[in-house]
Image 1 (cartoon, rainbow, N blue to C red):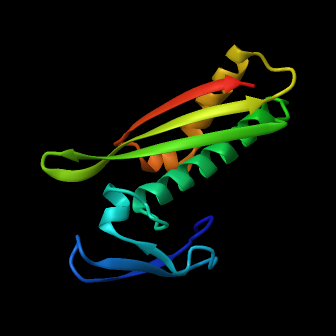
Image 2 (cartoon, rainbow, N blue to C red; image 1 turned 90 degrees about the vertical axis):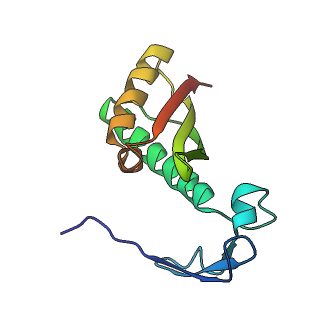
Image 3 (cartoon, one colour; image 1 turned 120 degrees about the vertical axis):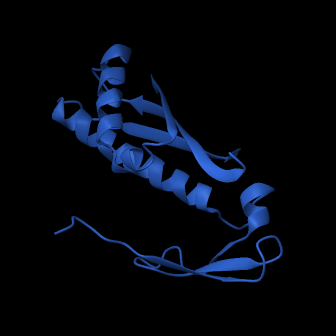
Length: 146
């Protein structure tokens, strides 16, 4: 039995470059009616989302949860964790490919020094399910205490 399952459905009309899609239904409803286009993905968002932006949101939120868990396991209580993810779409072998996710982690964790924080960040990197999903992509994590 799985821990969780979530669904999303997108309807696309038209060609890749002139068409558009709508994320119509999601499990929670929070992404319903979000527009996606190729131009929003590769040129500029113009108020629309993209698979890369959604992947970045998934990676940053997942990593923050994994880090909070690992900090707690080490007896450290974070006052604040900020995780930023930049997901890159590039051409590989003539095909658009998500090639990397670069995470920047800033934490305010009383009683923890930079090396201790980095060690726990490294543990979180091994735990985060989205990091493991992106296992074929280059994932970098830059961590610092604030």
